[in-house]
Amino acid sequence: MDAESARRILAFRIDPAVQARLDLLGEKANEGTLSDDERAEYEAAINAADDIAILKLRALRQLESYGI
Image (cartoon, rainbow, N blue to C red; front, side):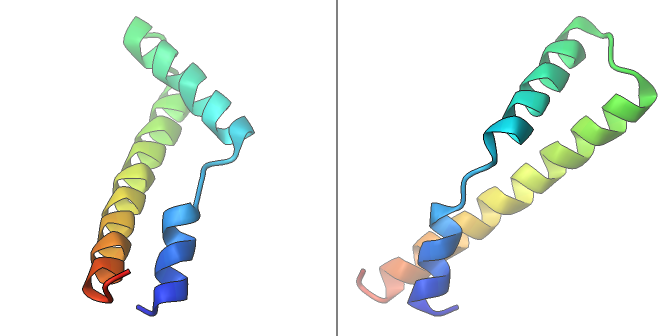
C-alpha cells in the first residue's frame, strides 16, 4: 500500500447518520429489544468496524515503515 492510500484509510470516518443508527442499534442491543433484522444489521456493522480497524492498523504500520 502506498503512503497516500494509507493516509486516506487512516482519515476515514463513519458518516454521522450511520453512527447515529449504530448508536441506536447498540442501545437496543443492550436493552435486548433488537428485531432479527436489526440484529443482523448490527452484527454486520460490528464486523465491518472490526475489518476497518484492522485495515487502519495495517495502514498505520505501513506509514511507520516509510518513516512517516
